[in-house]
Length: 129
Image (cartoon, rainbow, N blue to C red; front, side):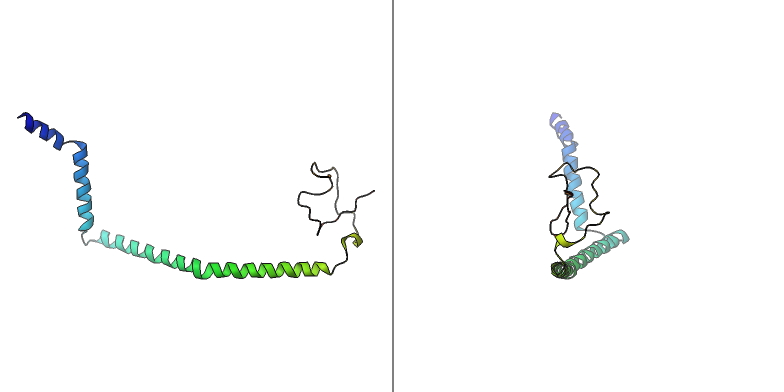
């Protein structure tokens, strides 16, 4: 009698019940019924596989070549721009107009005259002496 009670207690333990549930779940997954829910689920899985394949192909065969073409175009335009700039008169000979490089107060970096993004190839400022 004591052995029977001990067996019933262990058979009713949560670990064994969980194990039985897992076995049932695997058994039901292996032998899926042919009903509307399972057919729809299979169709969704198939659609997801086709969509991911489409986007993978688009990324490889469309996006990467477009990025390469855009990079070559940007490089070509960059070179044309600097070729055009080389034909302009030197920066020192260009007139400085009253609306350019207005300084009401010095910047707190460098010599106080140049902006944070100062480029000596493009920007020029004749400092009043």
